[in-house]
Each structure stands twice: as C-alpha cells, then as structure tokens.
Amino acid sequence: RQWETIKEYEDIFFDYYDGIGKITINREQVRNAFRPTTVNNISDALHLCREDNRINVIVLTGAGDKAFCSGGDQNVKGTGGYIDENGIPRLNILEVQKQIRSMPKPVIAMVNGYAIGGGHVLHVVCDISIASENAIFGQTGPKVGSFDAGLGSSYLASVVGQKKAREIWFMCRQYSAAEALEMGLVNKVVPLDQLEDEVVAWAQKMQEHSPLALRMLKLGLNAELDGQIGLQEFAGNATLLYYLTEEAQEGKHAFLEKRKPDFKKYPKFP
Ligand code: 2NE
Image (cartoon, rainbow, N blue to C red; front, side):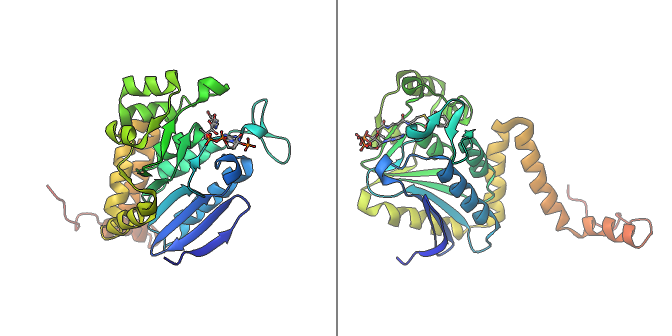
C-alpha cells in the first residue's frame, strides 16, 4: 500500500491513501506520548483533513508495534500543564478531542499497542476503534497525578457504562484487547499484521456510503450527549442542508432584488 505524504511535521506522519488521511504519532521512544508540539501537529493535520475534499475518513494511530499513545509526555509535565517550547503550560489535547468529535467525517482509531492515559482518551473519542491483539487499554491519571473528567470520563461512560467507567478510572488497571472488545470499548480486534488492512477495509466500506448521511448520523449521535453545543453543531449542519434548497435561495434572491420573497411555491412535506 503506497501512502503519500501530505505534510511533514516534527512529531507525526501525515499520509494519504485512497480517500484516507492517516495521522501517526511518531514518538516511539516514549511509547508515542504527546508533548505540546505533537498536539499542535495533530491539530494542524486534523484541520487539513477537514478542509481536504479528497479525505473522507481519518485514521489516527501510533508508530511502531508497541503503542498507540501513552498520553501526556511526563518529561514535560510542569505546573499547570505540559510545558511548550516557550515555557507555557498547555492542555491543548482537549482541543484535539473536540476537533475529532466535531469532525464531519468518520475518525477511526487504529490501536496498535498501548492506549494509556490521555492516549486512551484519544481512542475513546474516535468514532470507531479497531485494535490489534497486543493492544492494552487503561487510564493512569489518579496514579500519576492527573485526570480527564471531561470526555475521557463522561463519554467513556456512554461507551462502556457508568460502573465500568468508574472501575477504569478508580482502579487504573490495564485491560487486554479481548476485554476491551467484551466491554464494547473497541469495535474489532485483529492480529497486528492485519490491523492496517482491516482499518483500510472499514474506511473503504464507509466511503461507499453517503458522506452527508454519515455526517448527520455522527452529529446526531453526538448531539444527544453534548447538550446545547451538540445541538449547535447539529443545527449548523441542518443550516448547510437548508442552504442547498431553492427555498433558502429565494430568500437571498428576494433581498438582493429588493422584492418580497415568494416562499409559497416551494413544496411542504407532511
Ligand atoms: C505505556 C506503558 C504502559 C508502556 O509500558 P512498557 O513497559 O512497554 O514501557 P516503559 O518501559 O514503561 O516505557 C518505555 C519508555 O517510554 C517512556 C518510559 O519512561 C520509558 O522511557 P526509558 O526508560 O526507555 O527512557 N514513556 C512511556 N510513557 C511515557 C509518558 N507518558 N511520558 C513520558 N515517557 C513515557 C508505560 O510506559 C506507562 O504506563 N506510561 C505512562 C502512562 C501515563 O501515565 N501517561 C500519562 C497519563 S495522564 C495524561 O495522559 C493526561 C491527562 O490525564 C489529562 C490531560 C492530558 C493528559
């Protein structure tokens, strides 16, 4: 499979193949932990994925065969967050979580090893998680002086249920891929050497389907959980669909032509 580089970054690879934009965290020496540079790189690549018409599905993964992502890089954790090159503490991984959630295209986590701490949250917020048999899942926050009580807890509870979400956070245990599948935390588990083939097959299947339908479904599934912000995202997309109608065009034309709009001629559906 010939992946083509979309853009070069310091901490990630960003590649394209057959409608898929693949973001790979490339910090194997720290089990693909993220530092502020990594987060900025992912955020920029996600922005490009949103804008690029060739890209229909996004895949997020980690380099090598040991880790998807081990969360925040503890080497640069300071007072108030993870310290960037200017000495400013940041928690901007939360922005990346929001970008994934509001991305109007499916995002698949290709979990190729440890998904731990903030790395676990990253796969949780993706739409689909496909894991290799060696993948290991878990939160460590309360053990290392951190927590994600946002999507990392509330959305996790929507995925695996309240009791299990509390267990995952309170006990800080590690779970095998088989256990993750059992609790509905991942969609499928395959041998590591088949992981990318499986993910590409899922991405190709999704691309056979209507992108607008997938987009509205994702937003609807989010909206139920996201309160007024979920409604805002959903309504924004309803506006997009409305703007595609002649009825909406009539309002604009009437204004520009300084006449009364005639909305009566458009069909009303029961
Ligand atoms: C991931 C895990 C379980 C892997 O274990 P293992 O035995 O396969 O590898 P090892 O030896 O622990 O790690 C290999 C190298 O990677 C570094 C290690 O320090 C080690 O370095 P060397 O000794 O070879 O020099 N490494 C691994 N994870 C790192 C990390 N996150 N930061 C910096 N260096 C790391 C095991 O390594 C592990 O448990 N890692 C720590 C997981 C963790 O606690 N992550 C932070 C959670 S908090 C968070 O992510 C967060 C949040 O809660 C809220 C907002 C934002 C972030």
